[in-house]
Image (tube, rainbow, N blue to C red; front, side, top):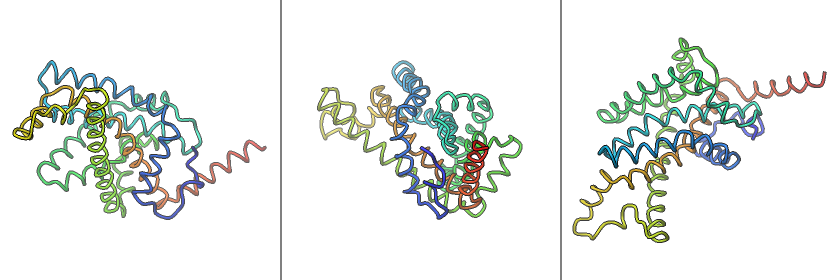
Length: 276
């Protein structure tokens, strides 16, 4: 799936358009993305079950663990998917190799960003989103642009200048899409598992309406089955939202830097070089 002028145009692309592009990309490269996802999701889901079942971790702790783990997968996904811009094949190996090359830097920066975002959301709400927006393109800048570590702040300033407010709204919309999708899919999986397999996950295990909220709260807090299924769904939906945010990055570069024109010249230069 080539992402040159045939797909991207100079006019601004809405957040809905970025989500649509993410879904189309996943449809074209589903097995490759699934292979990359398995490298991160399978250990994470297994760890979630073990922590809740054997070490008395809570549901909220596992969600926080996912929030710390997911940026690493997001960086590998960006590294793999971003190279489709130049017509290269989607490669799980390339994504993992690029992530490994800057693993500790990305891990360190994302730990700081996620921690500050969490504190901001708990205390002020909106500053948390502002921090997440400000540093949302870390993987794109460090892995796709190969920006030196000493200059990533300057490069982020360039990207955010004049676009921060728009990107803040886009991030909020993508987060809303993520939350609604996860909640809807969890209810669907819960109903399907209880109806078809006779193995309810959450609501089918509640004895009655008298203590409905208390039982649901207990299951969601301490039950390993609920935590494991919920974290699995988080991992399943996350690639769509991360790719949508990557397409927002492409859109910013096109509007600010005419990146589609640059890519068109690169393609033409390669064609002429091959013809000589």
